Image: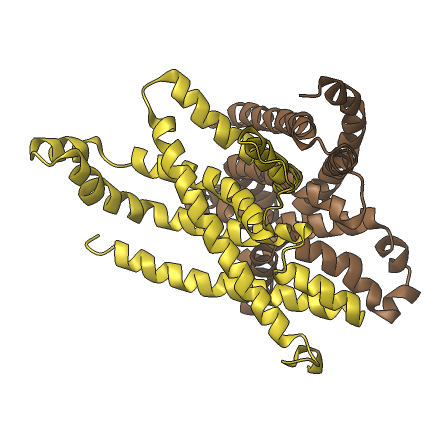
Length: 224
Length: 230
């Protein structure tokens, strides 16, 4: 065991954790909206809209995240037309490509989580709202969405942890996130176990925090 | 389409073999995972606190750390660990382990953590009366487990195991970083030499979708088989 290496690499890895957290928070933020949007589409009675939303979540849940990042980072740059539009400013940056891929991926999972949460809401609750003369819009925003969010908290907590692990793939498109820096240190020092303990410890700590945060929220917003 | 031609002109046959490689790694990893689950599930269900702790340590660490980091640990640390063991026995030459073995071990350990959780959940949801009834009927321990508990457990575990299979299948794409030529690595090579990454990565996505779709269909059949009588 090389404890000196563990101590000297800790600040470097901690600095890289900031990149990981930035990627995670940005993709979760955009992914939540995307997920909510597609969950609402899934509940639509129009079969085409419904199928479109299902297709989106099926494709992004059925393929590895690595493929999705590679298509966006390496693939989209190949389209000549894209290079002339303003989108190229975003797509030439690996940072934004990673965020786009993560957002689309987490959006697909989130849409499934929210859809099943919406579907478990008892019709009686909506009917009760209607009988009180509350408009459909307010029923949706003030009754259905809060209940669905509470219902989906445990599953969404898992999704946050999965996404946190997913951000490690950003290192494959040259970003120096926690895994990227860990790999760099391993490949220069050839001390994989020491680096794994430190980097893995940081990831586990983040998992621990997220897990407890979700538990706290679950308790706070429980019906009982 | 000529990019996908078989033979020397296209990448069809290379991608076909790469797909077989992905399937082979996934199945091996899944089996390695079952092996780990077989060890760690009893630990998690054990009466002893220390054994519980060991079981929980495995599932918590593996499920809380990115797959890629575990793969790097195996990729860079694997041959070092083997060489260390060999040096005890007086063998000092360089030993390189095959990428297939490293990859399926790494993915297998990850998949095993998920399988452990699935088995634990399935065993815990079997009614206690079943164990007691088997005991009362004088069935021996072996028969109790294989004839009474296992069939019931499998029925409960199959839907969740199909999720584990999907995760494992998708995780194998990460082994491409170690140079094992599976779908992702082959697409990377093809994309590099033809300068057509969009096509090859999209095709890789289609291959993965096909694999997940077909395996879902097969697992559904299995589910029907084990749900007979319910």
